Length: 279
Image (cartoon, rainbow, N blue to C red; front, top):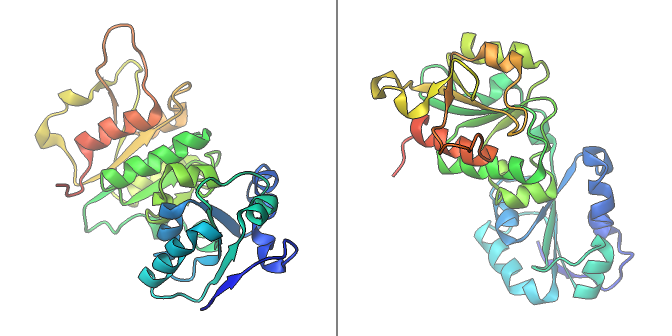
């Protein structure tokens, strides 16, 4: 597909990108069926998924990046648009310092079920289960951590923040596009299904009485199919999640410190329990 120069801010091909912040504030309903990716690394991840990208818009000084990215992706059939920086910023409603933004089809991500997301029982698997993670940066960081430790799938409670939200996607460096995730529709039933139907050993991050130190779990007690369950760093795991876990572990910390950022905690536990091969 050719690259098109845009000089008219009323060009309808720019409609995906109008008033990004105001529409972001309304959540997925602000831009039904569409998500926005910002910065080069995220858009390159989008291009790795055939059929996901709708349009790419870059400022004139990023034309070289655009040509290289499209070539690397095999010149996909997407609208590739170049505009003066003044028009780009007028359309999106704020200054995009890196001059790169793209719109994508979110339907393939939203429609996945738990059973479609979890690897089959006959192979090793590591799953990250997130309960009530509502912070934009934390949900993005959790996907970045998941990628680093070979997580096969992420399961989100119904009230978790949207991992395809523009800022969360940026924090994840686009890994929310490459790691399969499913949003639970029935939290209690899905937690049970992780163990009963999918054969995952559910390990919950908890500082409650009855939890054991993560570094005290014997090496021969590691499982080839494991789900690490993490909750909000303020509230921790709910009673429902705690009851569903097969084991509760805590991270040994210095006296006087009782919690870690949830993404940091997930990284510590995944480093210890992930079944993925790593180098």
